Length: 506
Image 1 (spheres, rainbow, N blue to C red):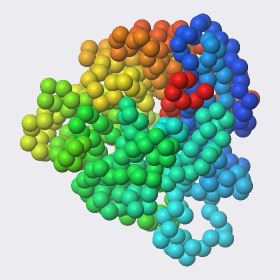
Image 2 (image 1 turned 180 degrees about the vertical axis):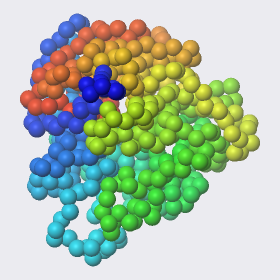
Image 3 (image 1 turned 90 degrees about the vertical axis):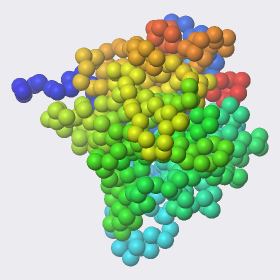
Image 4 (image 1 turned 30 degrees about the vertical axis):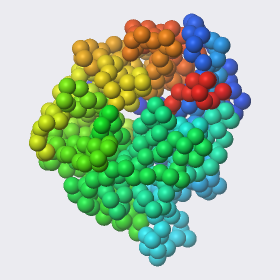
């Protein structure tokens, strides 16, 4: 390979390591190209790591960085943009010390010379001492309140207009939950379900009932549970499935070593060092009946995942669609060192390559039956979204960002997959890097894909620019875009939620 030749010349991974040095408190008015449909009126809130450097300290993993909330407001054919850091305890400590004080997913904190090993041993009896409260992953509505989330059992309420941090919520102490997924399911009546890891019961399904009073945390209840196959090595999970009658837990062979977690308290290290992979084992699928709490388990050939696309019941079967990986190397690929050395690693592209697959589970099959996973599209896709009205129901379309970096496209792509025909449609513009696409249904929709898709787009050649893209969800053609010039770097974000004017943010 020549000195100038690159393995991945068309994709700029450096966009993942940008730092916002100046919040946008006063809404920026964007430059509109095209025409935003008049019925698109609402607020798109997004969450992700807003800074990759604090003082002289550099975060070492894509999943790390202080949470920055982005706000796009669409009204009257125009749009505005704001961003503000979540004022978590970790954020306050880091900014006060001007260094990384608390260990994150893939980044070890800078040691405090005043803290002895005896201090660390004593902290074993207070889990919260070492745990980050950096809710950097997603945004979800809990009733009429909006919360930023991560995989630790702590949430931060966000004001949907000012983006002020309004307070912290922790899951009830009696639930003994030490982790939960960053992707709960919101029911049509406003109830929420999430899956967590309990020190007492193993995997648990937690219900947050929408009582119409605002606080949905006081009476959070466990409505289902099942023990992990390995007591000291429960599976790492970022999302879970739900259908009309079942909760679905995927027990992939990428696990959290509880022994390593305890070791981290005495010998501090990043959370990711507690992850262990067992590629010789099959993946397990666990169904928990929503009414009876009975569990049935199945197996499937070894696969790994972060995000479930959708799940539903049809013709006596449970269908589970997800973005699957061949191994757990995705976590390794997101380290700063791996990103910086990718051009000398011919396997790097395979590490982050995902494919949409469907696991089909016949409900009349005996427990522990080995089921099959088949492709529903031969295209790389991640952070998948659907028309949420079809959540847990038979559906046809999903939308996501391309996960392949060794393609001919210069930059990133948006992808629409037809799960029935396996056909895919792509949106692309050179040197752009779109974020998770969010579907908004037309108020008079007659078909599943009647609506638009919104995506916050970054630019590889201009790190002070962010664009709100509006696509026709049917043909994936651009309807409009709104360009914003930011006062400092525009960083990458992970997940978000759209709030129509009539139901939430004004």
